[in-house]
Length: 523
Image 1 (tube, rainbow, N blue to C red):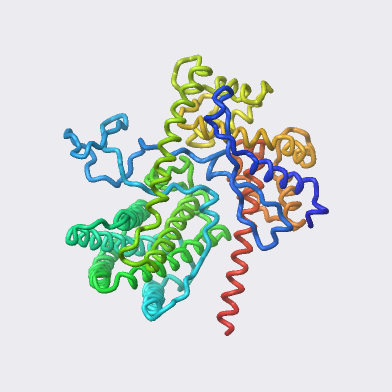
Image 2: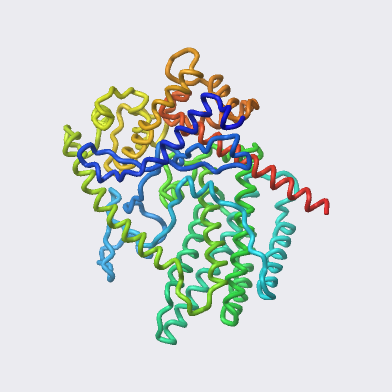
């Protein structure tokens, strides 16, 4: 199916994509209408991109991502509860029952565009040190796969969690060792470190959070713990001595180690999607992960593996970068981090003003949040006064829902969701005419929604008339139906189509990987 002969549905997809990309008006700059938006996110393009339109992907679980929530408490602080004042002035926040320390440590909150853009990459060894580091990682992986029996027999959920737990106990060591040694060097030489220490400690903390997440799923036994103790004792001391002698080889080693981690988590995601690890597809992610990565309350284990993979890809690229820098060069990430901090501060101030104006104009009940009817009135006011359907209000209210089973009419939209609600609503409004066009064609019973069979027909049309399986249709429906009524309503269409293109891209990437592996084995 070429662009010139695209079907109405495909043309509609292209319009949705182009319209969404054209939306870049800051939310806070339009205080008079309380409206704003940003482009929804591009799905990964597959190798036959000329046959499929570049659909937009929304954030995991809902119309748009949750904004960063500084009040969320993670297991990343030294002091949980104490009557004392913090010596550095770190403020306490209330969790309802007791005051706890607000965690000042930074961590990544990934967008859907970023988590699906992760690719398996490899940096070719450039010298003897790189070759030694690469061979050491390959040897370590072969030994671990062999001794743990990971690739023997059927892949199971238990094997996956065991592997993740063990590897994260190792992955959390390099950042802490590197950060500590550079810290001590800075003290000895009485000079600045130029930004390396913080990045390395952030990596170590991030890997520790991976571990603490996975151990909530399965508690290791005594034999497992003894294996971890022995491995950590050997690895930590070897890495410590090597980093003292030649830090470059250590960072290259970690870069190659993280390359393997990205491969492992990609294989796990493929196993989830093809049914070998089907229980992970809809199983709820641990609460510690939902808090740490600011995920939607109904985030799944599949979502967890996506964000963990994104973390590992980031560590891979950072360590390869450090391996290519001189020991006294400035960390290039420092300037980016400073600029991002300034941007976040400005955005936070704008957000406060935006929230204040929305509440002043539409929260007539004075509760500090928007009820179902108040939300409808606000959405109507930023849609040039047009009537807003129940499905549309529920779609936006789904941001505040912990479960699809809740009665959305009894919920309230808290101020923290106002910005993302406005952004999602603007994107939807800009594409609404084309959404109507798609529904006009596929909604044969004219009830304003697509049932399972109608969705299957649409996905087939977007897949070069190749019929999707019932399992694929169910997967798209389960993830796109944020309202929870068992069908695809108009506001859910973009997410449904976006998920389908992500699935296609993932399948084709898997085909290429298997073909490459077959060639490798054949040679």
